[in-house]
Length: 126
Image (cartoon, rainbow, N blue to C red; front, side, top):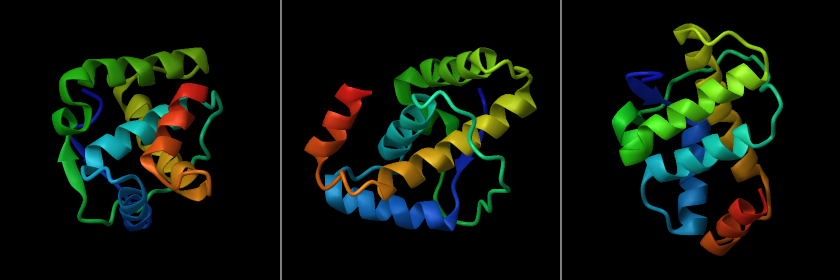
């Protein structure tokens, strides 16, 4: 597993709260999965900024990934390989966290997502 516990910043918690209201998705882990996949689909390296994991949103890796946790892990490893980055635990964990934070920022930053239908359309287009 990439990390034992998935944590996010307070800013990301606020962004996810707004997304929860717009989409009606009640679970943090579901929105976090969308955010990770959205960021990975950009095929660019997220900016390497320190992340303050200061919110009270925390879930186990298995809660984050659910029955497909191995798939999410494989996606991050494959992205690192595609970008020519090492695939050691520290690097993969670092880029997982960076992708998660970037994905949350991008999903909440688009004025496109006003409902769950908009989120689904985004997934189809990606």
